[in-house]
Image 1: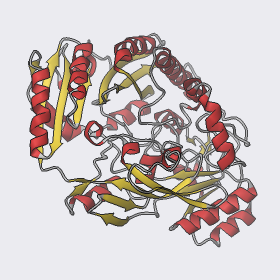
Image 2 (image 1 turned 90 degrees about the vertical axis):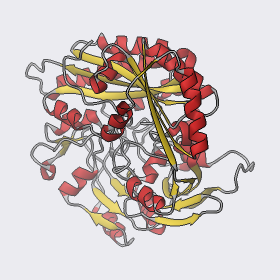
Image 3 (image 1 turned 120 degrees about the vertical axis):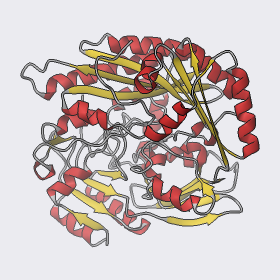
Length: 509
């Protein structure tokens, strides 16, 4: 089955270059409507905190958007999702605390933003106010090589961190596709996953503890000793909270020795289900390779020209003895499959971060996005069938496909890609907005109805906020209670996670 348009090669965690704002950032307006202003006296007091402060319109516009494909449509009309009244750039935790105390007293919304590589609008200031740029909070604080624990500032970019660690023979093992665009704090805040999560885990498995500043400016430290049993793990309250419960100012992560060996393999299967079954059997043997990527026939042929075959790509790294054992298990499980050229893995490694075609398609009027979810192995095939079918049924849809990119003993991540072309009929972007929202509505609800989760690693942001209560059920009220306790004035990243906002409802979709 061939796609009618040339979609980009499929990859995990697909941040895409933001489309240039039509007319330039200096003239950009807020798509979501009227924003909460930041009074001049508050701006004056923000400057006195010592943090960098900018009210320049172009700076505010650029800081007010992330890499959400839905909002790229608005950029073609000279709009950003929301528009901050001021951008504040603190250089230490004390300045973060001072900023939050001021904004909490003045009831001004604060949205934290790091590398802004998120693809769901998590760092979009839905009601304006202050964008708190955390990228000046950067650098390695300390490395405990005996305990293999890293203390790092949240604004540190992933590629810079990994380069510094590799020079010392170490690695975090967290390698998202956005590694050069994303920050450590962003990984934690959105519960991200790297391409090697089968071996190293997701970010929540790597976090030892956090420093967090709460809405009232008070600071706390979570975590501590290994496997501590002093009540609930408060670290995990903030992991995935997307800046709605506090601002992360320090992160402790587990480290690993830099890998000494790497091996590759590739296999062809008659069906997506058969390839996933092999993947399940490998993982449940207890020693999964770092990468097990399963492509349906559409995506495999799009990226690797493999015809009607589903494809499994395998890559492992680490201690040579462990790598040999993991690959021996893989070879045994895949003995009945077609052995493919291992150069396919090299091609993936060489091109896994190339997603510029997505920007080009949006600029040409297409509706394009990705949707990743997780599910138990027992539900995976039903979710794949139901969701691709629901997406293809939306008028204008040209392609709907999936791959499986992260596997665990109990389940895996399915990563859907979809594209559509609609007749705007004089409506401009409104027609594309409707189709975009419809694709997400039918796709996400097909996943939930078939037993999947809302997200695996992209998080919720603004795009998925409307589904959060449905996905969490009665436990969403507990999340709201935590929000009310930690941020009673609702200033932290309002409009996200389906939580109540004192600033009104978000006018999307």
